[in-house]
Structures are given as C-alpha cells and as structure tokens.
Length: 243
Ligand code: G3P
Ligand code: CA
Image (cartoon, rainbow, N blue to C red; front, side, top):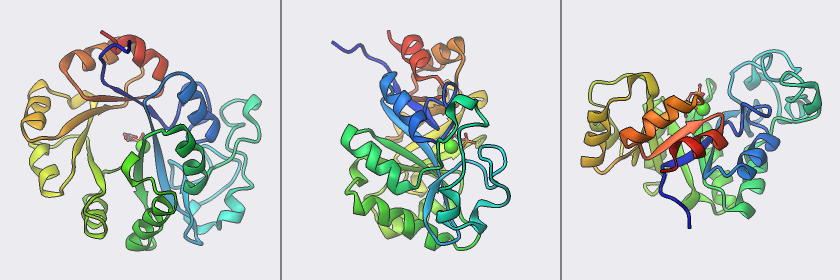
C-alpha cells in the first residue's frame, strides 16, 4: 500500500543525476518513482516547441547562441549530455513532441513550464497546445509560468487547460491565481509560509513548492502541508516526504 505523501515532481527530470531536460533524465526520474515530470518549453526559429531551460545554448549543450534563432534541425544535432558528464555524451535536446512520445505510454503527468518566445508569444502558445492535442494529453498536463500573460492566453484558447502560477514573492498570490483561472500556485521555497498554504487551500488551489533537493528542506516543506514538491532528487523527496 502506498503511503500518503505530497506529489513528487522531478524538476527537469532527475536533474541531480542526469543532464536536465533530456529523455534520460526523465526516464531516471520515472525509475526512481517520481509522480510527475517538470520540463521547460521554448520555441525554435521554425516554431518547434523544444525542451530547454536557458534562452541560450551554451550552458547545457555544445551549441552557441540564442536558441530561438536556431531551427529544430540544428538543435537536434547538439550534444546536451557531455556538459553534465562525459558518460552522457549524445543525449539530445528533446522536442516537446518527443517528450510526449516518452510520457504517454508511461501515463506520466507533465508540468510544462512555459519559458516562452521573444518572437511571438501567441504563436508559442498555439504551437505548444497543438502538440498536446496531437497526443491527446491535456488531461495529464499542467502548464506553469512566471508570465501571467501565458496563463491568461492559454485559458482563452482552452478554458479546460490546467494552469499553475509560478511566483517568487507575492503578497497574496492566491488572489492573482484565481483571477487567472489557475488551479495551483507554485511557490519559491524561501518564501513559503504556512498561511499561504492555508489560504491557497481555502481558495480551492493546490500549492506546490520549488525547488528543493535537501532532505531537511524537503521534510520541512512536506510537514507544512504542501501538495507537491519540485525536486532535482525525486528519490530523496520520496524518502523525506513519506509519512
Ligand atoms: O517550476 C519551478 C521551477 O522550474 C522554476 O524555476 O528556473 O528551475 O525553471 P526554473
Ligand atoms: Ca522550470
């Protein structure tokens, strides 16, 4: 019997153990018992949604420059593993389509953080939704963002879309989330307060916290009553948060 605990979300996959935002990091997270996967979404020049955290390619690939000025055919040739460890040479930047091809057979819920597009924000949202519709995966997808515009526009395109407001510090974040039609708040751990969790719950919102990879921090957050934790170490979160 599974013990009660908050939802454990693997932040960019099992990113403490494998190169972030790659299929191998997602697969490791699944094997370690993660309940859901968080991944960052951007757009290539030819409008393919890709899974990449930074706007620039240098930190996590052997490419150079602004990702949004590159076509998908160029991004898919990049090595996204060697920066982490030479043993991961050959890991690639996945497209959102490839992430869905991996997630769907495993019934793995996704939290897609909309990092966005500086070229055309509406094109970005439509391109992301199109991939999710193609795979019939709206029911298992939550869209998160720091950008209220994305969450607002998403709900205009599809009122059934589940959204989460990411924030660092807001005085009364639950009010803002409700205005946006969001179903959850994703709170930065340093600003996590018990009264915010209680106010979120009273407003019918879930509250997840990011990004915790220390055992004691994970345990403290779970004891405060969060609904989910975003972590680079899903195996540690499961251990720390299982009552
Ligand atoms: O979803 C929470 C977290 O992913 C936001 O920060 O910079 O890791 O994308 P970042
Ligand atoms: Ca993220």
